Amino acid sequence: MRTTTLGPLGPETGVLGLGCMGMSFSYDMAAPRDEDTSIAVIRQALDSGMTLLDTADVYGPYTNEELVGRALAGGHRERAVLATKVGSIVTSAAGAPVASRTLGLDGRPEHIRTSIDESLRRLGTDHVDLYQLHRVDPEVPIEESWGAMAETVAAGKARAIGLSEATVDHIKRAQAVHPVASVQSELSLWTRDWTADVLPYCQEQRIAFLPYSPLGKGFLTGRFAAFDDLPEDDFRRGLPRFQQDALRANLAIAGRVREIAERIGATPAQVALAWVMAQGEYVIPIPGTKTPKYLLDNAGAADAELSTADLAELDALPVPRGDRYGAVDPSRQPSRKR
Image 1 (cartoon, rainbow, N blue to C red):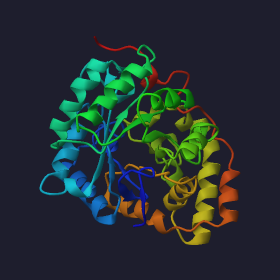
Image 2 (image 1 turned 90 degrees about the vertical axis):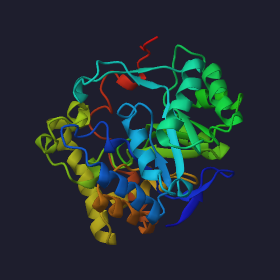
Image 3 (image 1 turned 45 degrees about the vertical axis):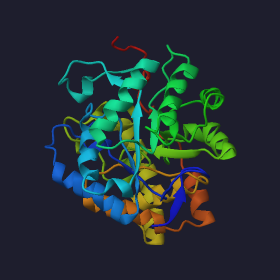
Image 4 (image 1 turned 135 degrees about the vertical axis):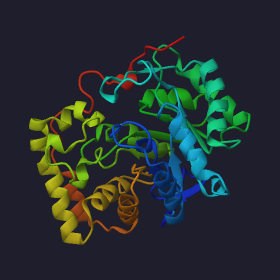
């Protein structure tokens, strides 16, 4: 696979990474977890050059980091650019269904200082290559949170630090404390919120941009034609864009992606990922999968060639019907356990 770097001074990594969240958190929670297959997928990603692995302590919670740690045991850690996150916490009761699960934020320095050690223990390593603030906690000045993040670099526990879903103002305030290596936010053909300001600023500052959900939470692959195609305990059932009326309207977007894919001899997933990678230097999508077949499909995006006309056609796609998360994004709520 072609390679890039995590910013001009960052480690070398494939032009595509792997989001590990779905292996143990969020999507079809009723389906049995196949840990052996997930470990095989992570190692297959490394073999294919998708060396950037993204996880977080809140995924599970905790179990996703443990899974990634087991996958990297036995000499595989050295092949990975390992990224995890801190700052989001589960506030609902243990065992609550995904649809009713609530998340809160905790950006207090003491939480960050404790969490890095716990993450390293679960991951089975003495450092991560990228430690990310999962969300900016509105109850804690970002300078305080970012100062604690910077301490992890000074202590050798993280090689670089990044932000997730941050505004330009957040990034600038953080930069005044310590360099920002990356910004992770949702970016796909049906979520372009960050292209107006954050992505251009990252390009200007040569900050890596790590798009999560670059396949529109699976929608752009063409696998979902109706609401009932979603598994019963799947959090997408609660998202506005997947409700039946909105989904029916949004099928036109997936249809156009499929048409271009057929024209250039690629798959819809490869076209969607190639568009994301074309958004600028150091833009490294991290599509998630727990299936070897889909991992192979995603990896092929590195070789997909979109012409100027293809990109213009994709740029002209309409905005999707429905918000990303509805009126309230639960991941942005300030409530937390003290």
